[in-house]
Image 1 (cartoon, rainbow, N blue to C red):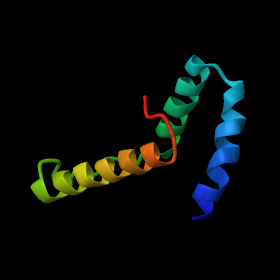
Image 2 (tube, helix red, strand yellow):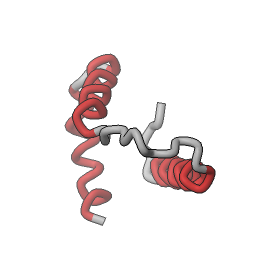
Image 3 (cartoon, helix red, strand yellow):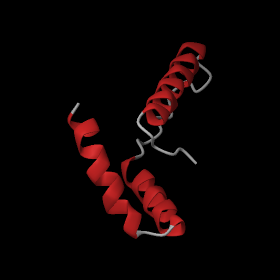
Image 4 (cartoon, rainbow, N blue to C red):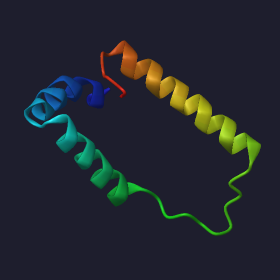
Amino acid sequence: MEFLEALPALRMAFTFFTPREKHQIGRNLFEIIKPPVNEGTDRKDLKTVLRAIEFERILFENASKYGTRIT
């Protein structure tokens, strides 16, 4: 819930940046926080794939609900 309370201010803070700068910030953050790939991880595990798809659906649904543009 704290994130949702902070979201309007966070969005305001990023209005200063151009779309290209926002994209680069997002790419840099992804590089910083992406988890390392474990060689033993089964990337084709159907259960994991389905959970990821469901998570993404919920994420996009909530982003839309709160007016956050995805693209």
